Image 1 (tube, rainbow, N blue to C red):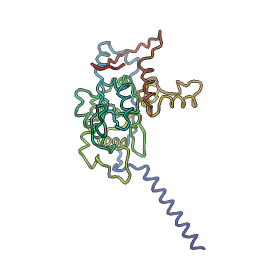
Image 2: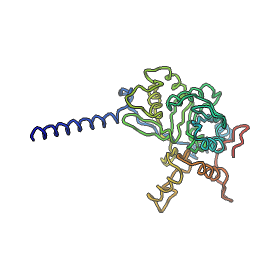
Image 3: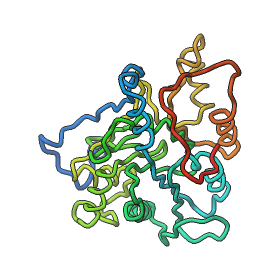
Image 4: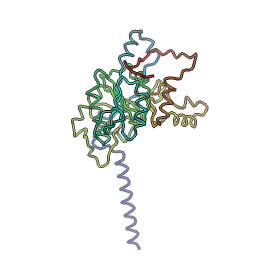
Length: 318
């Protein structure tokens, strides 16, 4: 009897140690060794205030509005054609260049065939293609087709930012010691950040094309690890009140959250009025968003925006 009890206690102890190891492993990021210079907390990237814009001359504002141009990298799959078609018909029209990247060829819609099923390898190939084919575009926005983006608000956020500096912006998250930008709500990269990333792609030790870890990391974390090796860190996009601009939920979900948290002021409790992305949306919800954002206007209201972002030349956007 004593022997059985002893065996039971040993089993309990070993089980506890195993659980502790799993817990520690869950907060550990493979392939990264922390050093003092690596200790970094993400910045909070904010758009310029109205006062800052008012200090600019009209020619300066026109120059700025024409200077900020965005290459949209939209990752799609043939099996979800309806999302692909909806993204193509709605918000992507507002990109200066929108390119769809697919895991395989599809006859129904035009896309770059990456001939790849692995999500991380597919993303690498798409970013390398975007870098090689971007021309004079200096900002890159990476999204899934279930994301709805308001590109004009993105341009406003990065208006005064220099694309020759390394920016990696979105909804910043943290996993253990690793800070990364959530893929679901969209990822913004400046030209310099993408240039460094494409260069580190060549280093299999720092940024392997096929993960060598015991467990598979998501592509958003793989991206953050590779960027960290080049000195580029995740930065959280916010408005002047500190509200996040990149949302991992749909508008309806955010409104429901706002109603439960602040029922007397749902709008204030919901989201920023300069929000850039909403995620997890159905094709029908995207069409409704398109109508609300770009077509519906309350008569008699003039919002007096200091800047106008004109549509890309030859675009049929709203």
